[in-house]
Length: 50
Image 1 (cartoon, rainbow, N blue to C red):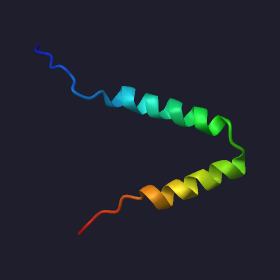
Image 2: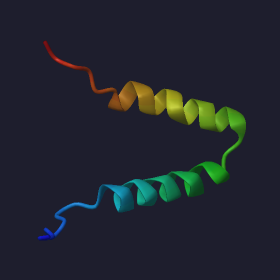
Image 3: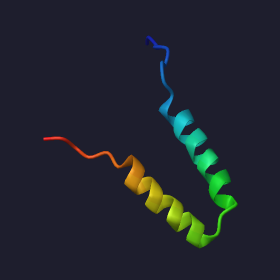
């Protein structure tokens, strides 16, 4: 069985992003967390195009 070298490790990337976000959210209050996600939602919303 032939193995190919990974160009991008999605699992490692997801874990890195989760850890970064966890560190950021650990320092915030509940209201700050809600405000953070509301702001992110309006800034980075990717909408499908027709």
